Amino acid sequence: MGAMQDDALAELKEWVQYEPDDAGRLSACLPVIEPELARIIDRFYDEVQRHPGSRDVLTGPEQVERLKKTLRQWLYEVFRGPHDEAYAERRRAIGHRHVKVGLPNRYMVTAMHVIETEVGRLLRARCDDPFPAIDSLHRVLCIDLALMSGTYVSSHGRLQLDTLHELLVEHLRVAVLLVDENGVVRSATRPSAQLVAGAEVTGRPWQEALPPGLLEASALDTQVERALAHHREVTLPRVDVGGDAEGRSFRVYVVPLRHELATFLIQIEELTDAVDMESRLRRSEALAQLGALSAAVAHELRNPLAGISGALQVITRTMDAESSQHRILMKVESEVRRLNSLVTDLLAFARPGSAALQKVDLAYICSEVVELVQSDHKAVTVRIQGTGSAQADPNLLRQILHNLVRNAVDAVDGKGEVLVSVADATLSVSDSGPGVPPEKREEIFEPFVTTKTRGTGLGLAISQRSAEAMNGSLRIVEGPLRGACFELRLMP
Image (tube, rainbow, N blue to C red; front, side, top):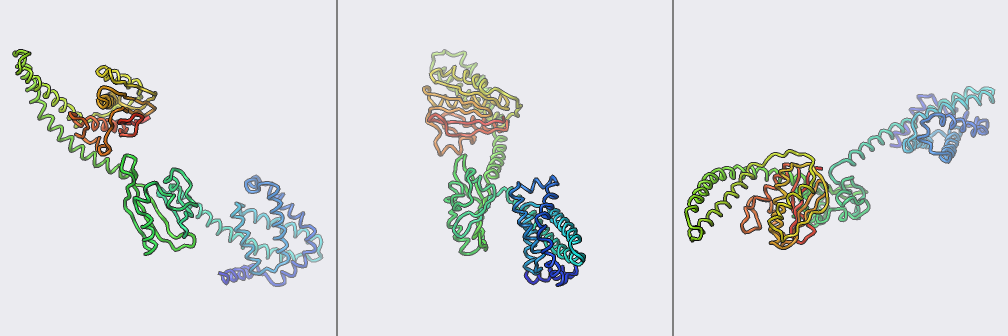
């Protein structure tokens, strides 16, 4: 590298026809120039500050005074020399510094023009034969400008590339942690902070920069040791953290590095949304098949059930209401009605209605449903708290609420409390009953799954499909009462 720079300097001197006598002429001019250096430097900065763009670079008088000292040192070197490789390296450093502080390249050109003009005017006024010295000054300033501009352009290009690289890294959707030999995160992409709820991860042990549970679920300490021992990338295609509705899924890579500042990197890609979408797709396909089967079964049952119900009504009219046969047939009719209700649920499940969304008052619809349900369960306390609105289909919303409130009332077994909480785009129904067993929470929304002794197991499945039809969601969460709590989220 040094030899290449020596060659570049020699080539520059050849191009501008620099000779050893040039250094001697400039050195001889210094006694004439030195008393006027302060005026020349002031003249330069007066010219610079005349331009509006200088305000973006020059922050105040203190900075200008510091720059004047730097310019004075530079001028002394121009006249004193020697114009060797060390001199050239200092000129290249000036180009780097100009890029670092954001000084546009035109200021270097302006400096050369002002210096050459002022010094030339001074030499012509004070010297008998000024032109050889003026020519020498021109050659040295050409070398200076070539050296400073060259490094300015290369440094500016690298800076732009670095800025583009930082922009790319900053907006990567995956989290990348660069970890040093002490296990400390030296650098990280922006999504890395999202893994630990917005906390800064740089400067912390890499284990603290991971989501709770990921370290244990992936045995990542062991995976890092294995990657470093064999100097081979380790890939964990999917790591599931947490098993309930709040669970998250990740893909993790551990990549050993050969760098003095980083021993390895950990790349973490969140798969939660993708896993959820895949699960929804599979569930949708399964529900579509189950819906088709349910529709077929419902159609096959509905007509016979209607016939049986009609026959029972005809027969029981001719019988003594107190007879044992009448009581038996009434029980049969009750079971027929239950089966007919099941058929109705099957058809509702098989053919979910489309949603006609509009702005609705959630508290008002809740009060309608609660009044209807509580009329049959006066011993149960049902409270509504909060207000809010959402984009929803009023009919589908009433069906969901009716099912949730009815389930809550049934859960408290005639004595207890049901709370309907309302907020914008959200409502929840909680009860003081026994709650949903943990082992049932994953499957509570599946068709034909129920915690009731005589339930059809379709109510929550239908409600969830209705919620999704309104671009919403229905899930079981922790509630304010000791029993179950179902939360419905809708579009605002």
